[in-house]
Image (cartoon, rainbow over all chains, first blue to last red; front, side, top):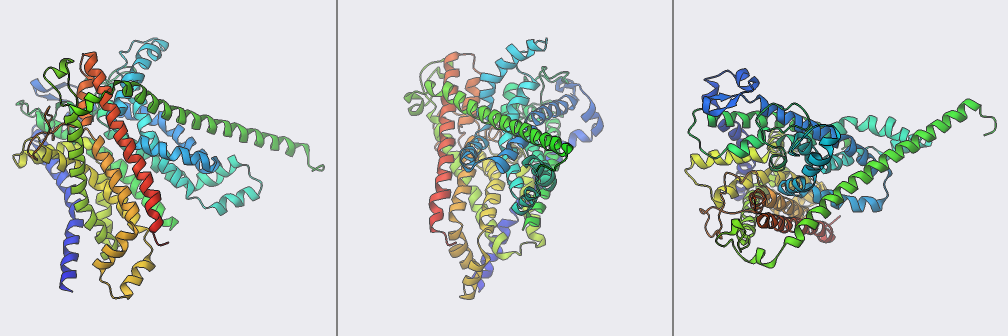
Length: 292
Length: 294
C-alpha cells in the first residue's frame, strides 16, 4: 500500500507540470518585458508606429497590424472553402472519398511549416508578383500580405476541415433522417438541421484554425517581406509579430530596452493566441460532453 | 400527384434547383481543395526529388559548401533525428505519468483534472516561436549556450501538450468495465493503469508518440535560438546541433543556385521523413488494434 501511495504522489507531481509551465511562461515573459513597461506606457508602445530601436522607439503597431492583416486574409480565404469541404465530407461523400481524403489531410496538417514556406517561394511569390499584382494594376515584389495569406490559408485548411468534420458528424443521424422523411432536400437538411445544431462548433473549428494562423512563424516570414511599416494594401509587404521575434531575438543587442520590447511582443502574441484558442477549446470540450 | 396545385409544383422545382446548385458548389470546393492539396505535394516533390543526391545524405558540409562546393547535410539529418527523438522521450517521461494520473487517480470532472486539462489547452495554443523565446530565456537563466540539450528541452515543451492531449484522448476510450474488472480482482490502481489500461490503449499511444515525433522533426521556430547550428555531427548534449528545417531555411536564402538546389533536396528528405511517420501512424492505428479487447 505504501508503494501505491508513493506512485500516486509521483504521478500527481508530474501531472502538475503543465500548470507550472503555463504559469512560468507567463511570469518569465512578463518579468522580462517589465523594464520597458516602467519607462513607457503600454498604449504608447502598442499604438506607436515608429520602430527605431537605435533611437529607443519601440512602436509595435506595424507588427500588430501586419499580424492582423495576414491572419485575416488567410482566414477569409480558408474558412468558407474548409466549411463547404467539411459539409461535403460529412454529409455527401462516399466512403471511398473519405478514405482517400483523410490521410492526405493528416499528412498536410503534419507537414513542417518550412516546407510550406518553400512552396510559397516557389509558386505563390511568382504568382502574386508576376500575375496577380499586374492584374490589379499595382506593383508587388511578390513578397506580400496576399502571398503570406495564401500560404497560411493552405496551412490552416486541414485543421479547420478535420475539426469541422468531427463536429458535423456528431449531429445525430436520427435528426437528419427525420428531416429527410419529412421530405426535406439534402440542402435543407444541412441548412436547417446540421448547421443549426453544429454552427457554433464549426465556428470554434474556424477559431482554432485562426489561432494557429496567428502564431505561424517560419512559413510566413519567408514570404511576407518583413518591412516594419504599417501595411496599406494586400500587395504591400508586412512584418507580423512572430517574424519580428524570429528575426531579431537571440542576437543579444546592447540597445537598452530592445530585449524588453521583443519580450513584450512575445506576450502580446501569446495573449492573442491563447484567448482565441482557449475559447474555441473550451467550447469544443463542452460540446463533446453534451454529446456524451 | 395530379391534384397538386401549380404553385407547389414550381416551389418543388425551385427547391430541386437550389439543391443541385448547392451540390455543385460543394463539389467545386472539394475539387478545389483536393487540387490545392495535390498541387502542394506534387510541386514540392517535383522540385525537390531531382535535387536529391546520395552525397547529400552521406556527407557533412565540406569547405566552401555554402558557396556551392561539395558536401551534404548529414549533420542536419542526424541532428534532427537526435533532437526529435530526445525531445519525444523527454515529453513522454512527463506525459505518461500525467495521463495515467488524469485517468486513473482523478475523477473525470474533478477540479484538479479540469485545471490540468485547461493548462494543456493553453500550452497547446502557444505558438512554437514563443516556446523558442521561453527556451532562450531559460537558457540564459541556467547559463547554457545554444546546444542539443537546450533545443531538446524546448522541443519537448512544444510536444508536451500535443502528446498529452492525444494520449489522454485514447486512454479515455478504454472502457470502464475493463478497469472495474481489474479492480475487482484486487489489483491496485497503478497495476490496473500499467498492465490493463496502457496495454489496451497501446496502438493509440504509439500513434500519439509518432504524431509528436513528426512535430518535433518539423518544428523550426522553437530551435531557431536554442539549438544553434553546426556543420559537424553533434556528439554531446552541450554542442550546438543542426536541424533540417533550419538547414532548408538558411540554404534557401542563399544567392547561389547550387545551395538553393540543396535546400530543395533537404526539403525532400524532411518531407519523406514526415511521410514515413504519417504512414507508420496509419499502419499502427490499424495493425496493432487487432489485439485490443473490444
